[in-house]
Image 1 (spheres, rainbow over the protein chains, first blue to last red):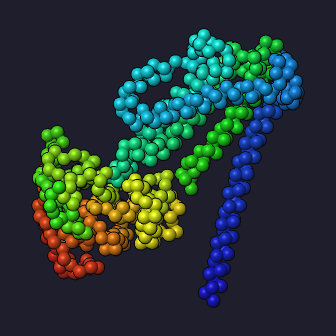
Image 2: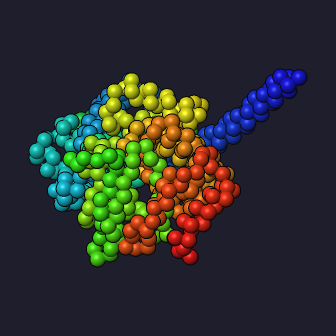
Image 3: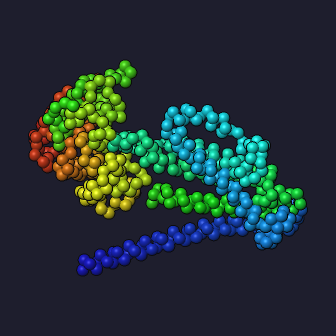
Length: 281
Length: 248
C-alpha cells in the first residue's frame, strides 16, 4: 500500500517536472520567435524603404540584392579582385593573429601586474602611456617598421585588443576575495600557489568580459588597417565598393563582418560556459 | 626547539596597531587533542588574536609554538574556519575538501582516503559534485569545517563558525563538531561570543577581558557528553562565565 502511494507520488512529480520543462521550452521558443520577427521586420522595412525610393538605390541596395551579391561573390572576383572566401580568410588571418597575440600577452601581463605589486610599479608607467594611444595612430609607424603585410596589420589589431585584455585581467585578479587568500595562506600555500589556484580562477569572469571587448575592437581596427593598405580582405572589399560606387559591395562587407562577429561571440560564449558554467547551475 | 608536553603554547602574545594596544601578554597552553573555547566581549580583539595564531599578522611581542617550534603555516598544519563563508566557489564539494591537502602536497591515496572519511562523517555523499552556492549556507559551513578537519591539523582554529545560524541548527552543528573532534582527535581552539555554545563544547574556556585584551580566567568544564543545557551544573558554569564577561 505504502509502495503504491509512493510510486504515485513519484509519477506526479515526474509529470510536474515535465510540465514545468515544457512551459520553459515554450517561453524560450516564444522569445526566439520574437528575435527572428524583429530581424525580419528590420529587413522588410529596409527593402520597403529602397523600393519606394524613400532612400535612393544609388546609396543603399536592398537586402535581396545583398543576398544575391553574396551568392555571386562566392565565385566572382569582380570588382575588387578576390572572391568573398579569400577576403574572409585574409581578414580572419589578420584578426586572429592580432587578437590571439593580445590574449597570449595581455592576459598574463595583466594577471602578473595585478598580483605582484613590484611588477605593477615597474610596468604601470609604460602601460599608462601606451593605453590612451588610439590603435589607428600606430598605422604610419607600423608601415615604416613592418611594411603593409600581415604582420603590420596584425600589429595594429594587437594594440586595440591588448589594452582591454590587460586591464580586465588586472582588475579581475585584484578583486580576489581576501578570505580565500587567507584560506590558502593558512594551508601554507606559497604566494605563487595562491596566485594560480585562487587568483587566476577568481579573475576569469572579468577576463572573459575583457576578451569580448577585445574581440569587438580587433574587428573594428582590422577594417581600418585594411582600408589603408591591402590587396584583399573585407575592409579592402568595402573600400573598393566605395571606389566603384557599389553600395551593395559595401553592405555585403559590413554584413559579413557583423556575422563573423556574431559567430565569434557565440564560440566565446560556449567556452565561457565551459569554464564558468558552475555559476549557472 | 623547546622541550614541552603541550601541543600548542602561546607565550606572552602582544600586539599593537600603531599606538592602539590590542593584545596584552596572552599566554596559555593547549594539550594534544584538547577542545578549548575562547569567549570575550565584542570588540575585544578576538579576530586579531586569531590572525596572529594563523600568522596572517605578525605579533609585536611573544610567539606561538606548536610542538615546541615557532609556528609556521608552511611547516605546521594549521586549519582555520573563518567567520564568513570561505568555500571556494568554483570547486565542487569534493574538490573543496581536497584543496588544503593538495596545497600540502599529500599523496593522492592519502587524500582520497581522508576525503571519503569526511564525506561519510558529514553525510555529504549526495552532494560531492555540487557547487557551494547550490547548497544552503549551513551546508556550506559544514564543508568548510570538513575541509579543516580533513587536514588533520596540529591546531584547528574556528572563528564563530555558527554566528549566523539559528538555535536548532546550531545544536545540530555543535554535536557534529564534537563528533568530528572525537573521531579525529584534533586540537581545537573555538572562538565564540555565545556563552552557552562555549559551555556546551569546551573542555576548557578562556575568558578574555576588554582591550588591551588578556586572559581573565580559565574555566574547566568537566561535564559528561552529550551535555544537557538544562543540567544545574551546566547552568552554574554558564552563569559564572557570563558574570565574568558582563559587557552589557
